[in-house]
Amino acid sequence: MFTVVEWPGVFDYGQSSIILLGTSAVVFLHPVLYIPSQQGLLFNVRVFWVWAVNSLLHSVLLFWLPMLMTAHDVLWPSGKEGGYLVLGNIVYTYVVLTVCLKAGLCTHSWTWVTHVAIWGSVLLWFLFILVYSNLYPTIMIGAVMRGMDHMVFGSLVFWMGLVLIPVVTLVPDLLITVWWEQVQVVRHALAARSALAARCVPPAFTRLRASPRRRSAYPLVP
Image (cartoon, rainbow, N blue to C red; front, side, top):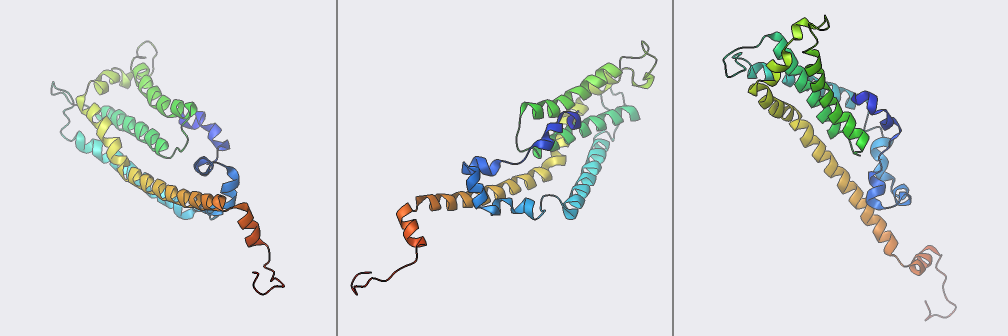
């Protein structure tokens, strides 16, 4: 759902500099704010492989953390254990939530479309499990999923992992995002200070400084 609803983002562009500085004219006077995009720092071959390795790290954590969490197979207070289908649906639920939270970390401008896309994706997955787990035998599909909603949602282990595992997976991303945002804030603040200093210079002084200096015919007159 996120990729379908978020298509207006193709026409979006960052305006954090304009918001911080108050006017687009000031931004154009300080091209340092656009250095990351001008030099291709935001997306290049290196950034691509960083994202690829990061996604591989996410995959490893999202698989092995639930595996370790269910290592003793007991998922319910009754002592019953789940099979590979229960584990698969648990892992996929964590994947959906982690992907949506990661999309939120990469989002700079939150709008109602963004909220619908991110939180709506999580809600649709839960609704899908509820519906698909109760289709059989009314509709002769998904026999192996019958009752899966009760098995997954009835496990306290699942709900504990739903809170902890996506958070643990995204902690490195969160730290890097906070660091990068601080770098951007400092860069914008320096540009804003420079713009403010330029505005505080009196116009007469600016014209005097810009005009060539002429010597007076009288020695004591500058």
